[in-house]
Length: 100
Image (tube, rainbow, N blue to C red; front, side, top):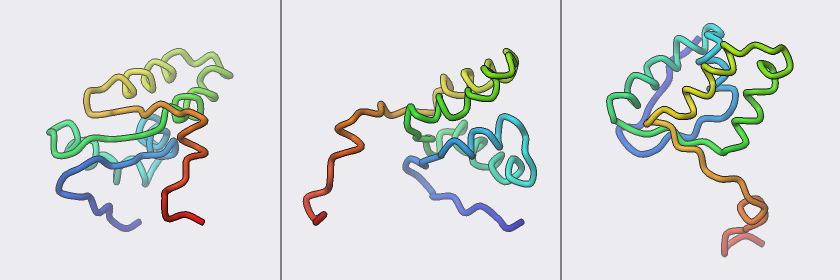
C-alpha cells in the first residue's frame, strides 16, 4: 500500500470508510490513517465529515448489538478534532453559482 499525503493545515474531509477503517483497525488502511489522527490530535488540522457518517458507521454495531464498537465510534465523533457538518436538504440541493 502507498502512503497518505496530508496537508499542512486546514480541514480534511473523511468519509465513513475512513472512520470504519480507523475504529475497526482494518489493515492496511488503519495504519495509514493513524498518522492523520495523530496530526489532527496535535492540532495540525481538523477532521470534517457529514452527520450522515454517524448513520453509515453505526449500522453494523447497532444491528449486531455491539455496544463496545458503537461506543468507539461515538467517542470518535465527539473528539475535539472531529467536526460533523449537519446534513440538510438544502445542503444536498444547493448548486454553486457557476453550475448549469
